[in-house]
Structure formats: C-alpha cells, structure tokens
Length: 215
Picture 1 (cartoon, rainbow, N blue to C red):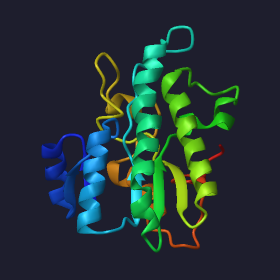
Picture 2 (cartoon, one colour; picture 1 turned 135 degrees about the vertical axis):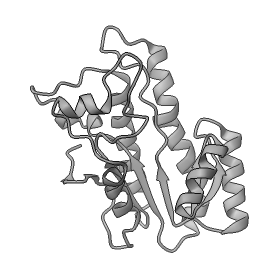
Picture 3 (cartoon, one colour; picture 1 turned 90 degrees about the vertical axis):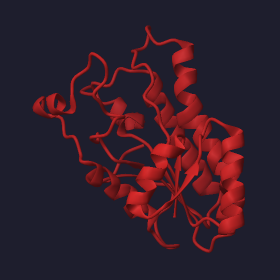
Picture 4 (cartoon, rainbow, N blue to C red; picture 1 turned 135 degrees about the horizontal axis):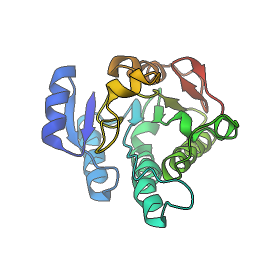
C-alpha cells in the first residue's frame, strides 16, 4: 500500500501510522506523477486500487464575485489533477486483475441537490469542480467496464480541509450550528468500502455514508 503526499515528510509520518509506503505525489505536477508511476511499476508491477483524494476548496466566492482565476485554481487540482493521475496510472490499473478507482467527490457537486430550492450552496468553483469530477467517474466507468470506478462523498469531516479557516467558524462552532461533522474515521468509511469492492461490485455510482447520492 502506498500513500501519496505533496509533502513527503508529512506523508511519511502518516504512512508510518497506517503501515503504508510514502510516495511523493502532486496531482498538479506531471513529473511528480510520472515518478510515482515509475516507482510503483518497478516495485509492484500493477495497481489494484487508486484513490483520488487530492482536492482544494479554493476561494469560496459566489457567482458574480468568483473570478476565472478562482475557477482555474480549483479545477487544476480537483479536475485536471484527478484526470492526469488516472491517465498516468491506467497501465498499472490495466495490469491488475481487479482494478478499482475511487474519486473523492462531494455532495456539493450534485446537480440534483443543487437544484433543490432549499439548497444553501452558493459558491461557484468548488461545486463546479466536483460535478466535473463526477463526470470523469462516469466516463471512465463506461470506457473501462472491467474497472470499478465510483465517486464517493465522505461528507463534512473534521480535517484541515474543513476548517478552521481564517476568520471562519471552527469545527466546534459548525457542530454547534447543527451541521454534522464526521470524524476522520467516519469520513473514511465510504472510501474504504468502495476501495474494497470486488469485480462484481458497483461501477459508475455516486455514494455517501448513507447510500447513493443523486448526480
């Protein structure tokens, strides 16, 4: 098992705690991706499971306030980075008997949920990027029927990604406001579940801890 991290030192500490081999991997850096692929090719020869977990929230500005640069910054990691990683690792996935890809998405990327009149999501870049990531899932699931390719949403999870941000509410304040904030273990459940499916498992789906999520 490999754990990819932009910061190899930080990744090494986490990898040691879970018994994984740390590997430097930046989804926005083609050389970094190629080096990671070459190492896994040399050491393992194939890849059974690829979890695309790289993601940034970017500037959470609403339509009319968000800039094109805001969009580019988020899409670079959340969409183009994910696509680049899957593309580069395709030969190693094809070499596996049971290839699995898990794209870590978000419910904010659901077109159905966003069209609900009660939806409170007004930011532009991040939801757009996750909707695009979901399309990446659908297209790869269709193009590689032998693979199991799925999008998952871990929900709001108590990590540095969720908060606290400068000037923003803390995780405790978000919980006090009634938002469900998962522990890291709870957020990881659906990712692990979809990573461990067999060749007869679902493909081309969007799933959360409570079951299917509408596209």
